[in-house]
Length: 154
Image (cartoon, rainbow, N blue to C red):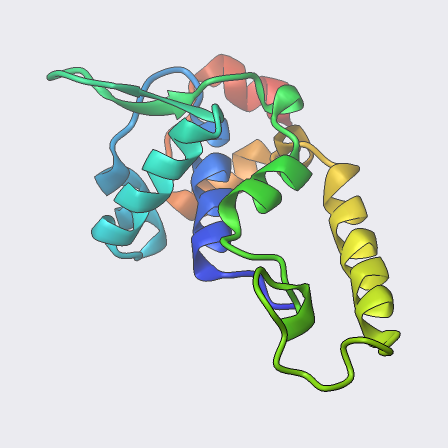
């Protein structure tokens, strides 16, 4: 299985927001830190807001920020919510399958089991697990941390 860029960018955006939780940031801040397309990240932010992972704030002091503490943002839910389709093979998708083996094929069950295992790994982790090294991440992302945050993450 290959994770879509949309999901990859969503996880990266959440990491960025978790590294600097004290104030809202802009999608442009995230785009600049990662060298990614602002337009793609706007779509990602909208979807994360629909999933309840981020809050969007309008106005001059607006931006985006985590809607929950990182410990409450489950990676499995984010991956499921961001992926347009988790159909790894044609017969798992919506609609009729063109494969002639569909009525007797056992591959679909094996692929479904593999997908369940893949998602089960994400289900074991939260955003907090991704940012236990906040200070290192902040340095790589060019994010300044408050002194109390830097000490807490050391």
